[in-house]
Amino acid sequence: MINPTLQNQRNLCGRLSVCLSPRSPRRFDLQAFSKGFLLSITLTALTTQSFPSMASIGLAEWSVYTPGGNLISHEDGWKQTYGDCLRADDSDSTLPAETRQKVYVAFLEQWRYYKNHVIGKSKAGFFLFHETNKQVTYFRSEPALMAAIAAQNLGTPKSDWLTGQDGWNEAWLPTLWKPCQPFLRRNGKPNQPQPDGAGALSA
Image 1 (cartoon, helix red, strand yellow):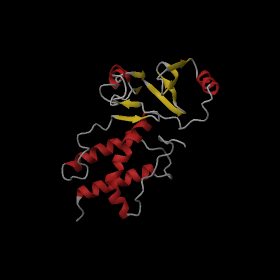
Image 2 (cartoon, helix red, strand yellow):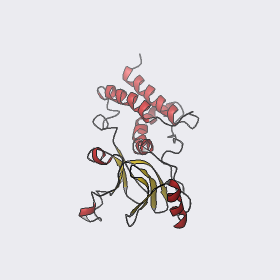
Image 3 (cartoon, one colour):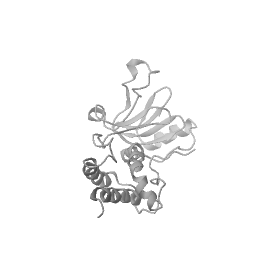
Image 4 (cartoon, one colour):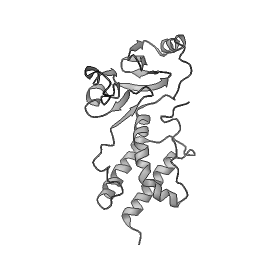
């Protein structure tokens, strides 16, 4: 008889593999997958050590580094006031203490990376953030933002347009995938698929 817990894990990993397959008709869906995943790891954690570090982690929270070493976060302590936000890395000891808690852009809706810059749209409007000097400039419209990018010769974008779902994918998919590898390796699928455009940076 197949162990129900192992079968549950196999089903979970199979869903993850299908969702992330390049042949999948849609991008990875955070909400649809995470509901099933939360239920699965709760059941699994009661009977196995396969997901030992995840039973007490809030999967709704995430934080990712920008190419310039700043953070984009959706975390307790920040999201209640700032939503998805672009902020300083509070673990960076090289920053002055008074700036480690600084939020540069609050309520992010989407963002994109350029050379030494993050651009995007927030509740306050379109913005251009310089990753080194930490200056933020806001614009009334996307054409005005794009004109500023051209005027500063920032070149081509280094990423796709990204959203909170992409941030979650980047933060969590490697962790979710690791326990699945033994199951999928047996089926000839050992490599981690990459969701189309989710957090991928160009050279």
